[in-house]
Image (cartoon, rainbow, N blue to C red; front, top):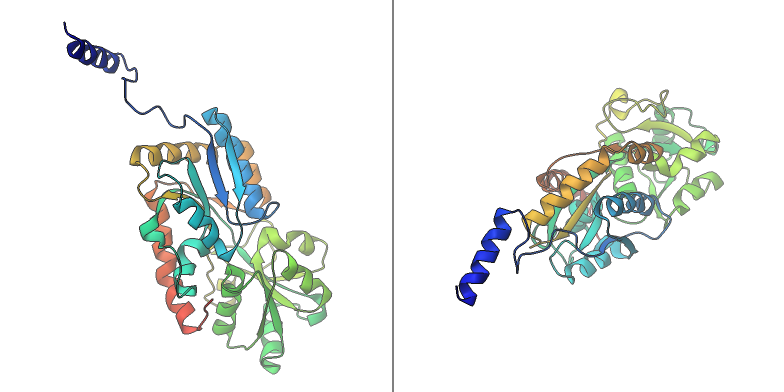
Length: 322
């Protein structure tokens, strides 16, 4: 048996025994994985990303390192991910704004979600709550609408920045109720803080971002998104109950660079879905008022397209751009 025949026999034997043959790719992951987060450390997104990274590291017996790269509503982080090999070792912790809103907000966006990124796994969705400062003297959402209509353009609202979900959510509220307000963008938690000081009396935010202030009665919750009331805020009506069509997506997903092998994506997807069944991780989601979303990689593209189709026309109609 010559050398070439010997190598062929060894490879065939390895396959028959279920062992990796010479030259075949090692099982994923064979080295540390990076999870890129487009927000600063300590934010809600960062906390969730680190909880996920910890669970995956235990499952994979490899380090999963969270790297924070804030700026340009995720564009800087995505540019970084696009510059890495398409091998699954650099993942992006995406939000709906990065994948569905940005193409309509930025005239010269340096990436295309559909072209440059590949869906890996959905994670969770957050409901939004409309809150008001006690100084506004609005005990109900109907009170707010009455006050705002009586003072067109006088009432300001806070957001996490132009084009942020909190901004678009309030613009949708204004359109649906027929009120005029002034937008005051903030970075980080500044928006919620400004409500307590009375600078900007109303805001839409994810529940986790304002729940402590609701509990301490520094902010009043007047309405929530979704089809049913929240267990954490059982006395607060939904917009749907009040007769307003205000549906705001607040989901998170994991994506990779386009071209990542399908086998690697399927592996990561399966492992993330297992994490979503983990009791400790579920408790982490509950503590942030998040609902888990399980599904195949194709769910990321479905959610992305659904909200791009819904919000693209809204963003254009409201003439919001960055």
